[in-house]
Length: 246
Ligand code: SAH
Image (cartoon, rainbow, N blue to C red; front, side, top):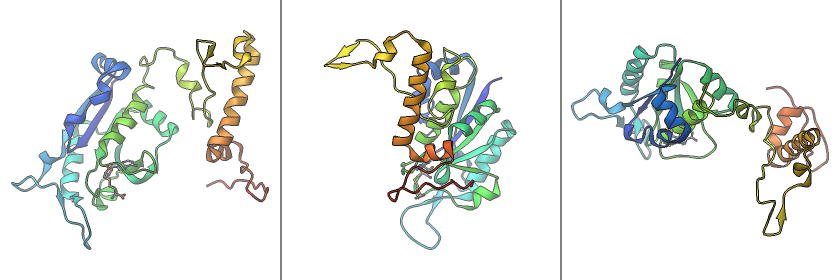
């Protein structure tokens, strides 16, 4: 089944962009996924094709109009009634690999890309729109965030990645960061490869990788480590507390 992506944007020419090359590009040409980049401006109501207006309450910037967005979403839903509608916004729920996996197993997505100050808030409840953020950063538009979400989904579609196993060992798939990788040359500018990786002992290598993955997660991403183990990484006072479920 084809994973159908509809992107609602003021800049449809940004798509497929980077998703037109490499594995995603080949999968697009082969029909593993399909893309429809739709111009939001086509759903403007007035003859000037206005999509935005000044913020209620005053302040800088412009806000995307709810009536125009609703028309664009309604149009997208007629051809993809089962796909979730996701707005890219820094106010949304942080995107996770678990959500990406769910989306990749579904019929596709309708992605709503903001610009300027963002969306009129009423669109989210008014059209059952999920709000998703791709990180605690502010982009100038939702398009790069949409490309990111699509890239993450597409690489999980059956047949897109070469080695079937590679999707499952990655960072986040088991709640941890992946272990580090090395390749030839064995020595580079005086730096060597960990001896164990050259031992040929598969059990020892697996144990080393598991332990590196745990060490790196604990040091680099205490938030992930706490979720994984249910134990808080030691605070300055040395106290450890059980993590409450949220
Ligand atoms: N005024 C908004 C930011 C608007 S940025 C705020 O402070 O919350 C313009 C558009 O870029 C947003 O509407 C959104 O579609 C996109 N965008 C910016 N940062 C993003 C992020 N971290 N994740 C997803 N989309 C983002």
